[in-house]
Amino acid sequence: MRDKLNESEMTSAQAIVACLKKENVEKVFCVPGESYLALLDAIYEEPEIEIISARHEGGAAFMAEGYAKASLTTGVVLATRGVGGANLSIGVHTAFQDSTPMVVMLGQVHSEHRGREGFQEIDLDQYFKHISKWAVEIKDAHRTPEIVQRAFRIAKSGRPGPVVISLPEDVLRKVAKMNVGPVSRIPKPAPTTEDVEEVEAYLKKARHPLIIAGGGIKSAQAEAALIDFAETNELPVIAAFRRQDSFPNHHRLYTGHLGLGASEAVLKTVKESDTIIAIGTRLSEVTTQDYQIITHEKKLIHVDIDFMTLGKVYAPHVGIVSDAKEALKAFKKIKINPEKWIHWAKEKANSNKLASELKLSATDPINKQVIATLIEKLPSNTIITNDAGNFAGWLHTFYPFNEKNTYVGPTSGAMGYGMPAALGVKLACPKTQVVALSGDGGFMMTAQELETAVRYNIPIIAIVFNNNMYGTIRMHQEMHYPTRVIGTDLGRVAFDKLAESMGAKGYSVETSEAFNQVFDEALKEAGPTLIEVITNQQQISVSATINQIQENKEK
Image (cartoon, rainbow, N blue to C red; front, side, top):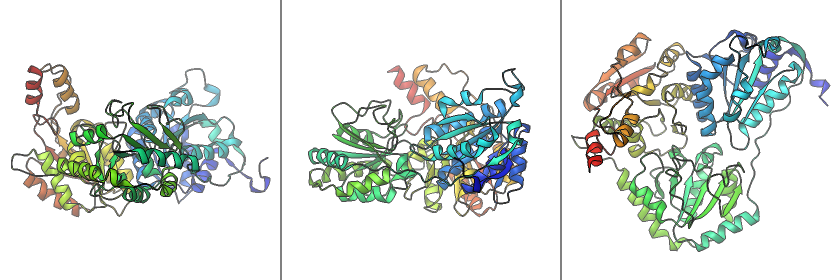
């Protein structure tokens, strides 16, 4: 029974705002639309909630997703009907694969017009069902608080992710008696005594144990607990794909990153391991190198907050449904002698450090020299975001993430992510330096959001590596269909001029010396800055040129 004492008469739109306020939502990202004007008007009346109006729904969704990652809260994004929803679906998919809590509210056509192929009509709850944790339409105004608060609870609980709410425009305006309940506490399940005993038993038999740390470490804010567990038991730690900041990269037990183009040293470490403790990772296609590196003879201890994740890829010898931090706290009871693998762990960590050590020469590509400059000049708490593309290989290979919550990247591999995500990150962490890395292909997919940065005075630094092509796809073309180039060449864009036309600072450089100079200027800027770095088309990846790929195919 609803609590009659706490009931208030308000519109559905006003009830949504009351729920947002209860959840301490401070920023809402959107592209405005007529179908949810009642909700925008209700937000207008709430001074504690700021609307960030973007240029494209995809950009707005990436901002909300980046904001959620950086703030460790739930991102909120609004859009209109089928067209707006379709545009932001890339951000919903990113939040789903990245396990990022996000509540997506989409205006919907008038209830009386449903089923007639009304203007911009899509069954939004069905459209988003398979890429969200829950997709629902509010049909009864008085149930608005119940559904919105449930949406936040689902988005935050278990494996975090996006929830989509469809809002018929007539329902938003309806007045009803509303009851906004308390904010739910996020459940934090812990291992049982039997779970801990099983883990201890497997570790006692191990010779080459290894931790793979995923995004669950970050979500649970378990970084310190992971360091303690690893140090106590001398366990080497590898970061899952694009989760490098889950463990300090300068730590003596850090053994690398299982990402795209993972080093031979990292792959060898996994190959030699006999017991893998996977914590807060879904063991994705990229992390497991096409599901190849965790073989049947290895003992797998898999800890994840979502029971559906356990056994989805690999059947674990020990499967534990637990919050990562709670699991690591429980593992403090484990008593083992790590002497059997101390030397192996040290050797693997040293191998990774040698493989990722950045040594510059005059002939190195500018991509590598840019990363050297970032390492030299950025504070250690700088937050880096990146887009999808081969340019990120230099970042992942050489840049050390030594502090927690300093990296925001899309495990979904979404192009167009880097710069708008950086805007969300900067809004969440206004006192922290934020730098976005993109390729020219990805940057142009959401380049319009640079104007959003100018309009709201969000001072990020956007670095665009420009080789006038879709470089990653060109690399795969050359690997599988050498010299048969089609569709991957791009025209010249003057990114510095593009930035200036939107009111941002713009630079274009072709040498490391020039980059060093303009980067110093960018660090002093009070507004958004873009630096275009002209790169050599031949240097298609960290490890190979186009000519080398072609020569290898001929052999």
